[in-house]
Length: 188
Image (cartoon, rainbow, N blue to C red; front, side, top):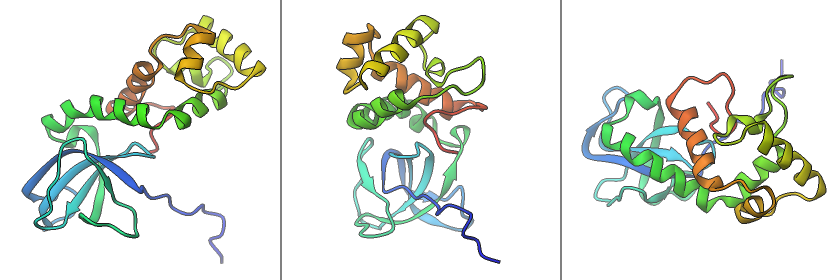
C-alpha cells in the first residue's frame, strides 16, 4: 500500500524569535533542556519550540534558520506550541514580529489577496481580514479582475484600503490566538 496520496510534510525554513530561556526546560519534549526558544515560523506562522546550540546568542525578533539543512544556531525544532502555552513576554512580542513578517514578505501577502476565494456561499476569504467589509471586498474583486495587485501601496491606491499591513497582521494574530474554523494565513 503506497502512501503517495499524502503530500510531503512542509517544514519551516526560517522563524523569528519571540522569547528564549538560556537554561530552559522543554514544554513539548520531556527531559529536554538547554536554550529553549519560542519562535514563530515565517511561512506557516505556527508557534514553535526550538532548541538552540549551546553558547549561541539570540535576540528577540531575530530571524533564525531552522530548516533541515545548514542550521548554524539551532539544534532542533522540538514541536509546536499553542498561544496559551507561551510566555507572556513571547505573547507581547508576537504582534510586532507578525507585523515584521507581513512587511518583509509583501509579495506573498499581496498574492494571498490576489488569490483569495469565497470560503462559503456567504463568506469570502477577503472578508476575514479586519477592515474589509462588503464594500472594500467588491472594489478589491473588481480591481484585481482588471489587474492583479502589485504591492501594498498599489492596493491602497486602487482600493483606498488603508494600512493593509496592520489589517493582515491583525487577522494573523486572531488566527494564532483564537480557535478559528477558517484560517487564511496560519497553517495548523
